[in-house]
Amino acid sequence: MRRAHRSGLETVVAAAAALLVVQVTGRIVLGYRDYFPPDFSTGFLQDRGGYFYGGYHWAFATHLVSGPLSIVLGTLLMSGPFRRRLPRWHRRLGRLQILNVLFFVTPSGLWMAGYARAGPSAGLSLGLLAFVTAATAIAGWRSAAVARDFEGHRRWMTRNYLLLCSAVVIRILGGVGEMLPDVPPWYDVAITWASWAVPLCGFEAAERLKRRPSIFPDVRISP
Image (cartoon, rainbow, N blue to C red):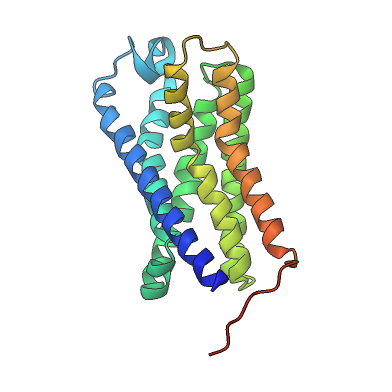
């Protein structure tokens, strides 16, 4: 009974999280109307006009398309029912996800990291995020396609998904900052690191707890 209750609760939490991710991603995409033509007076593109057309615009445009696509694909691929009912499509979309992350999300993210408005520390965070995202994608592909280690594949691709969702987390944290009466100068740098490091550390802690033997045996009720 305890396992069934925990499984049901995890399903509800996962569904709520997926809904939040899709909703925030949708709002991000709706905000693209300020980018065509680019508006350098407000929002993300504010004060970027001086270098925008020097190559930055190609990375920016690539990230606009590949980023939300990777989040939507990741949300679908993380779905247990989708994986069980449509395993062939899971594999096909999984390959598309790996290619998208390695050849579009990561290179464009690395380029843009060099122009982080919050400064060098934020740029370092975004650059490291791009590298780790690519590394987890490669490890996830190898664990399934080469080693046939599907539990390892699950762990690596969960890490990858959490890293991709940093775009969602940082916007939520940014919204929280806008509601504060006085935003400290270090806030933007802090949320840049927290948006991916905190979820990743939380996942690693949860995985360690799952592998530890329980001190409370499962209660079984005989019929």
